[in-house]
Image (cartoon, rainbow, N blue to C red; front, side):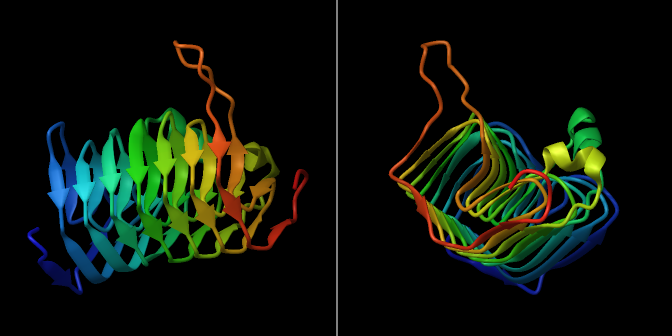
Amino acid sequence: GLGHSISNLTIASTQNNVGLIGQSGSGTTLRDIGLTNANISSSGANVGALLGNGYATLSGDYSTGQVTGDSGVGGLIGYLLGGTISYDSSSANVTSTESTFFADANAGLGGGAGGLIGYDYGGTISQSDATGTVTSVNGPTGGLVGVSRASSINLSYATGNVSETTKNSIDSEWSYAGGLVGQSSGNINSSFATGDVSGYAQVGGLAGYQEGVFSASGNITFIKNSHATGDVSSYGWNG
């Protein structure tokens, strides 16, 4: 990285794990990499401007442009399997076209759409932000992170509008839309969202759905010192 940027990167694919870097493993560090006016699209899962799928430590990275994929779609990272994210940002507009979140999740694919990360499993996000719009057909949708599983978000924010547009009542159970996070089973601390949020079922200004999960030490997940200011609307059965 070293502060360098790549302009007008265009990728059109039908595969899973798509981005400037498709997949990464333990020990990967991605630092100070910029992607401006990127156009990343795939009919597959796990799609991000910088990283499609993997474990990584990221700092000082950013993206602008457009990212489109089936599931696990993020402005910077599609599916994060652990690591730390700090001082990263994305203003890319994100679109997820997945029709069945439950099937994708069971197949081991990411699921979810987020302005910065589509699906975050066990990662730590701090002092990072997303300002692009996030739109999905079905599944967890968040301004910053679509799904935050056993992860933590600190001192971070999202300002883009979030829209989840499912018309499928069978999959409406997975219709989570939040200004910051669509579906969370992790901690959110000192963070905020300002975008408007709309969705079919579970819809919230900050989080669409927050699970209370106990850890081995007896600690439970929490939201604290965080807020949302956008308008919230639900057109389904559980607003």
